[in-house]
Image (cartoon, rainbow, N blue to C red):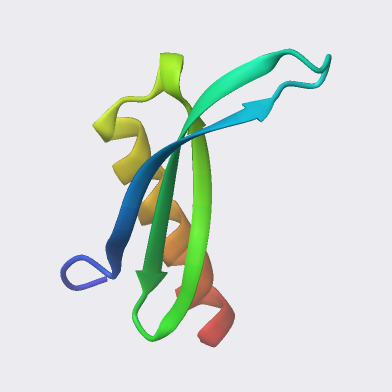
Length: 69
């Protein structure tokens, strides 16, 4: 993969519910992979790290590109 295949279009905070119904804070990342998308991934705010987000987006982009080949 040459260069970065994904582009973040929006980052925001949101509140959702965990499995047990407890409220949880999330970082919502909206992004595109080339012309595909938009896609959304939510990271738990307490566990969010930019490196984790980049690794996820890199893997997602590779998966999308694999579907196209």
